[in-house]
Image 1 (cartoon, helix red, strand yellow):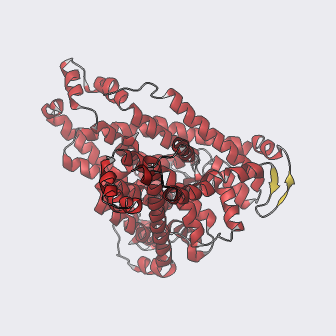
Image 2 (image 1 turned 180 degrees about the vertical axis):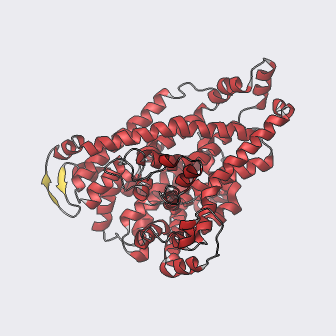
Image 3 (image 1 turned 120 degrees about the vertical axis):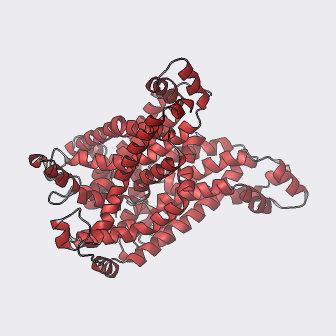
Length: 294
Length: 279
């Protein structure tokens, strides 16, 4: 037995290929990235080290802060509007018979299965000022003066992008919550009912506390998803109008692959990674701190 | 469940609400199909009416101008090959960590978890440069290597959990019967892990198939583009007036994944939620 599990050649064969591939493309690139962030680099060759010049450029660049403000807004929208909707839908779903459950799970999951490019293009049609769904409905309701060009308007562009993002993943998050709900023993609700707790009270006192691990998981996934928002923005608004829907990753993309300033792009990447680690750490620290066994 | 059974009216009301909301999720997709069957004038005149006259020309135009078969084949190659590499290397590494006696197994596990925190958008700049320097930019192999590398950490963590739940006796018996460790792994352990492998295959496949960011940055040759990147450049080249053709291209490019999803919907939902439940 030990002979087999301590076989050096077998160990190398099992461990090395995977570790090598993972190290080369996931961990190792962080080193050149850190080095490049201190250089003036055009993607092909470096013109030498410039100290903290790139970081100074990023941190004094208003677009970087607009990008951060925008992802915070999307994050808030997704966390306080999107996730509660998913949770409520999951709870409603839990009360239903098999057929309704099947239909609703499948229907709401489809947007998450389709490509972001397709989803975004559909919504470009929905937001179309002349014949799009939103303006047609508004006109039909007699709210003619509310209708406008949603995606090219300074005030509505960002929230329109956020709505598409949240809409696409509401069903996905709901299915995650629903999977957690199924694992809560039904007897708890029966006991609560006997003690006179209504549906709202038992949701707050039983469902949410017992769902805390899933809530934390969904929160981390959706918050990191908001932070990395890129494809939706690229398709729907290209960051515009002006910088109204600029995000950090969109700025990173433009700085490095459009303006060919890879040093500055790397500096944005390093700062963004720090933000991700910080946010994930904060959620880990403050959400669902105590384990509940059941 | 008792409370609910007594409250039949409430349940019926919720069912109506859910079906209504479910339809709002489907509506944009049905609208896309509707658009694809209309002429441009019809779209502008009556965007929500049924197609009148029914126009299949959009599909002909989309099929002749949109390189669907090339992009589709590329997407299939990238996702199938990457998923195979991820599953093979990932489960081998997981087996090494779960079974073999190595002093630093714990350290390696932490090292892998570390990689799950690094999003690919952060390291795309050095990856782009590395591939360029190695002559792998704009090649299929380059893209496949990157996709595979980003799938390994998650796969190992999940397969490790499953392998720990398999009893040691499985291999003990095989090894005593004179079966080598490679055969024990491939013909005893892997078959026991079929459900876990299927789950992981689904997760990784959806990830690679729907990826836009990595493919968009690492490929510029038209013949190497994935469906997601290809359809975007098609939209850009087409301009904004030909919504019928846009709709047709969207329907064509969504059909493969929709068919796969509708056949395996339950398994796919379970697979994608398995990650959360394991925690």
